[in-house]
Amino acid sequence: MTKALLIIDFQNDFTSGGALAVPEGDEIAEPVKKLAERTGLVFATRDWHPPDHASFETEGGPWPVHCVQGTHGADFHPAMEEVDLDAVVDVGRGRDDEGYSGFEKSDLAQILRDRDVDQVYVCGLATDYCVRASAIDACREGFDVTVVEDAVRGVEVNAGDSQRAFADMRKAGAKVASFDEVLAAAEAG
Image (tube, rainbow, N blue to C red):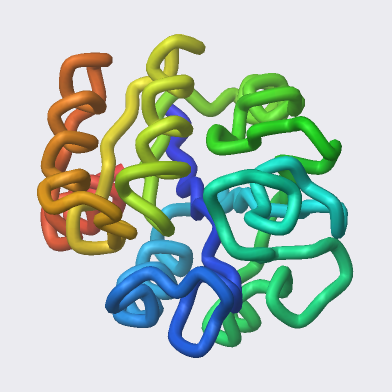
């Protein structure tokens, strides 16, 4: 069984001071780095929007302008400088691409299959949007998925959104485990 860590959208605009900061988003830095050191293969998704992305408030969408291609906000969080990535998948690249899931309009599933990955540990931002969508799609693609519950954080537009997201991911077939449980499993082989 080949295991991989999938880091979802751990970018400046989703952490403190960012355009769409996820509450306590910075707190996943240490768990993400430790998991990356011990998991083997490490992949990341990156929100990578054009300046006129349809999801932006300026274009009639629900979100502030965030993660615009080539900007500081779209760069990975500084903690990611210590992470060796096997591949980065950009999502939401087109004006009308929703881009919540790392698997949407990307070759992420094929990249994982090409590396013989069958088990994926998911961490990152935000639990109730991109983590949820990516974990569910990973299950649909046939991967054994575990969401690392203390290495994700949610936007919580509405109270309880993250808990509903965990329920949705479980319903799709994902497991939810603590950092310590995942680390022990990853190190066990």
